[in-house]
Image 1: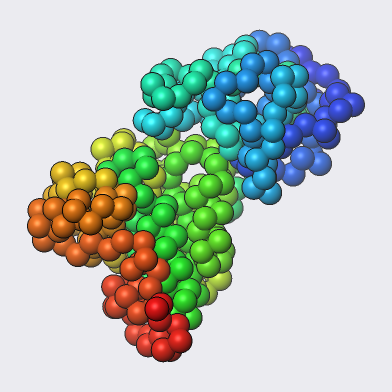
Image 2: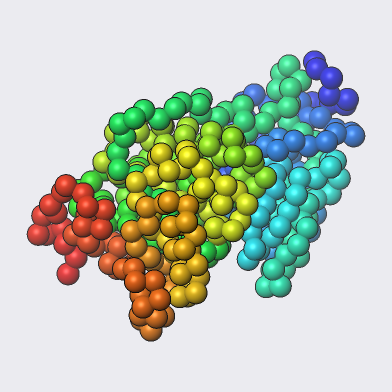
Length: 358
């Protein structure tokens, strides 16, 4: 047993605890003890917690994707971490095992620092203990990470989707582009390289035809908020290398949040990103946002080819943005069209007539 100050056997109902999306890569069969007392959590630590108050999140996303209802008194398995979500919660890693908050439905326990006015107070949880293995070591998401691999010089065409902010339409645009490429008979792999551990974007890209789909939780992070550039590059390189192993024709990557968010700006401006990305779509909700994005991406030498996102819900907003940016802007139906998707990425593939959308 290592130096954890206080430990106890697992409760008899441990296996009844709801296991969150963020824990899906962890082998729960390793769990042997709980660590209690004056402990300082670390990012990615697996914790057994009890729900004490239901707030914004009344359901917990399980590893299978199902959103399970929670009741006060339920026990859940989640990971400690931070969160950066301007439309929801800002949260930091707690300093101890005192009561804290469920700050993401995918299973992140953190200390709320601020919330959007449209958000209810967060669901409160009481950590029962950090989960330890048979040797008394903390079980951490990083234990189950993919090994680091550097991407070879030859790789499939890789397109990245970024945006002005949360809810700019990044995932929706990426998923519809994936569908268009899938309809064209191309094998597509996808990954979300930054963000908060939750399955909505992951499942959306998979449902649209990408296989496999990965995210940063596969590299041992419940959230990428606060990671260094070196850690972000490790995530990106490892995910792209793993996708290449599945021999896709095209790789689609999503970068979370907006271009002024610290980790997003850091990875977008990196040599690693420029080396691994061939083309980019930029998404936003209005002309001002996408014009700002265009200038920022061009300033950093990134290969922007088109705009998309939430603004395409309005034909008028789309025309305004086209005039402001002098860039092509595609709505979701267009991105999902196999002929347009192939032409947009300038791929050497001719879709069959029956593959074209009516």
